[in-house]
Amino acid sequence: MNELMQVIILAIVQGLTEFLPISSSAHLILVPLLTGWRDQGLSFDVAVHVGTLLAVCWYFRQELLRIQAGFWRSVQGRPSRFYSKLAWQLIIASIPIALIGFLAHDFIATTLRSPLVIACSTITFGALLFASDRFSTHSKMMGQLRYKDVLIIGFAQTLALIPGTSRSGITLTAGLGLGYKRATAAKFSFLLSIPLIVLAGTYEGLKIIRSPDPVAWPYLLTGIAFAAVSAYFCIKAFLSLIGRIGVLPFVCYRLALGAFLLFMFW
Image (cartoon, rainbow, N blue to C red; front, side, top):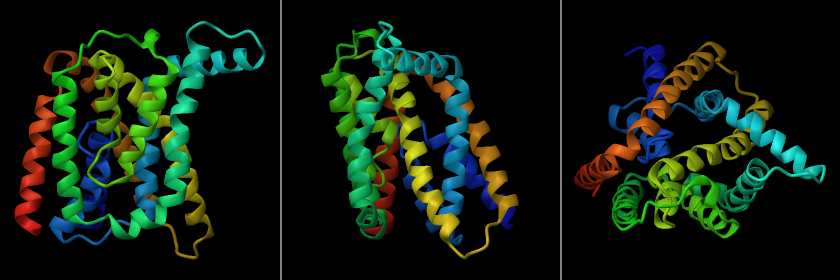
């Protein structure tokens, strides 16, 4: 299979898995591993994450404008009741993973990127997602978010540094466990992805700029485009369906994937 087709497939995989509770990082590690493709490299990972960032920002563009306005209103001493609070909640929830991710980045990149780690975390956190959804009250709305709750979600998000956990999956698990409705927990999870992707993309992007290696811009731009389109439609479909179908299909997928990886690599 030629390199362009590999770029397109991996970009679509990233776009579809970034916002589903099944771990995009695990799939980007596993697809080349299982197919024998060479590792796509840091620049490609950054590019497809830029694509998913564009998708989530475009989908929530009106919401983001209100959050931005709410933030500046709070800075000026005249906060709005909802969006100023939400802006600060997103900032506070992003602090734990920013600190822990910066400190533990090298250890995670060199030690935890193994199929067995992915298999165990896929199964473990899949079961936790099921339990969180099964025993949740599903009663709280976005306007009921408390600072205590967003801190819990923020610290839960740090577990996504372990490949196979799923950032969206663990934040959704935390939100459901705190009693929020599925759509509310998913929406906050998606909004919370924005500062994280910006921080991680900036950190990794600076590495690329300093690197003497050439950058294959046509492939990177192709990856950005396909990741953005697939991620946009994934977000739209997930938010429209999550209230009806719940998380069971994703839990079943995680358990099956984890069992397959254990069978292949144990």
